[in-house]
Amino acid sequence: MRARTFTESGRRAQIVRAAIAVIAEAGYLKASFSRIAKHAGLSSTGMISYHFAGKDDLLAACVTEIEEITGAFMQPRIDAAVGHVAQLRAYVEANVELVGKHATEVRALIDLVRNAGSRSDAVSGRLALFEEHFRTGQAAGAFGSFDARTAALSFTAGLDAVVATAAADVPEPAELTRIGRELADLYVRATAPEATGEPG
Image (tube, rainbow, N blue to C red; front, side, top):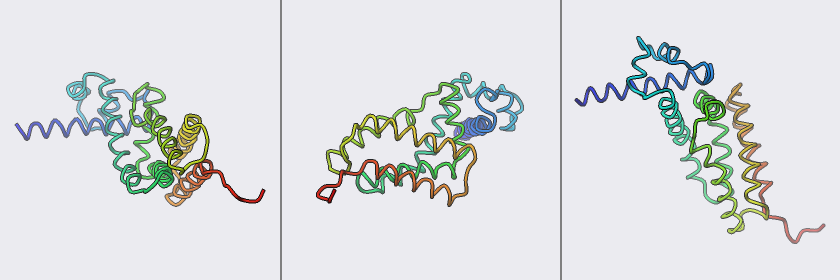
């Protein structure tokens, strides 16, 4: 029984990985079961239907898998950063560098959210995450005076644009690091407390 469960679990994971790869390469609209089955080395699409209730079920599994992969890459760096400013920097830099490590997953998630209407809690929850981070940072004196909601909207949109552009044509690792650092610098400067007591 345990061997059979392991085999079925492994097959399901194999199908999910194949689906992510096909979506990243060809896009959601062209990610047919036949194409995914071929990429996974399956003899027929029936194996996909056996493990998943339908395409929506498979896509949901893809999103879950991608969120786990991206979270495992980003979260330790964010957790290791001390203070609101350092955590903001760590989030931005890790998100950009993620493209170099997991470009396939990033491209697939972008396509699933944009074109398949898939829900990703990691993506949809970022706006509230940024807004709360700015509010608590302002209360602690780490950030200046600005509307946290507007800043969160601007920053998530800007970060998305940078990540999507990089994922479409992945730069060299050193260039990705530079881009992430530059973007983080920009965000840190934009949110810094107002200088006081300086000559006008």
